[in-house]
Length: 178
Picture 1 (cartoon, rainbow, N blue to C red):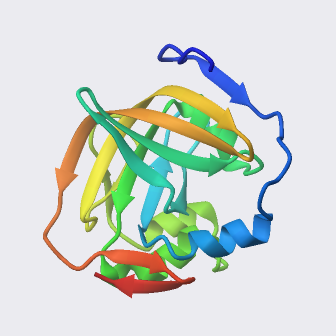
Picture 2 (spheres, rainbow, N blue to C red; picture 1 turned 90 degrees about the horizontal axis):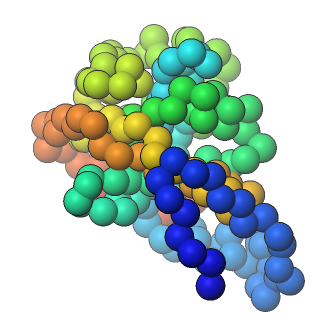
C-alpha cells in the first residue's frame, strides 16, 4: 500500500489494471447510485468555467474538505488546476435546464452559461449560484490522478446554505426530485 500524499501534492495512479468487469457493466451499475447534481465552478488566472457533476462527496469535517472529480481529458481540467479553487453548487429540482446547460447539452458558450442565472462570489472568486441549495467555496489542497479522472480535494473556505427545496438527483439516467 502506498503512503498517503501530503496536501498540495499530486499523485498519479494511472497504470491500468486488467478489467475485472466491463466498463459498460460498471457504468450501468453506477446508474443505480442516486446522486445529487452539482455545478462545479472556478474563476481565476486561467479563466471562468464550470461543469455539471455528480462525483462529489464529503471527505472530512475537520478541516472541512470535499472532493470533486473531473475527467482528465476535459479541456476544463487545466483551468481548475491553474485557478487552484472551485465552488460546489448543489442544485434544486428547478435547476434541470441549468444542469443540462453546464453539461454541454445546449448551444450556450461558457460565458453564456453563467448569464442564465444569478451568480456571486464567496471567498475564492469561484462563482456561487445564488439559488443553490448549498454552495461550498474551496481552495484545492491536493489532486489525485486516478485512472480517467482528476480527483480534486478542496478545503472549504466559505459556504452558503440556501432555502430548503427539493434536491435535483440523478438516478437511472434521469433527473429526479427528492
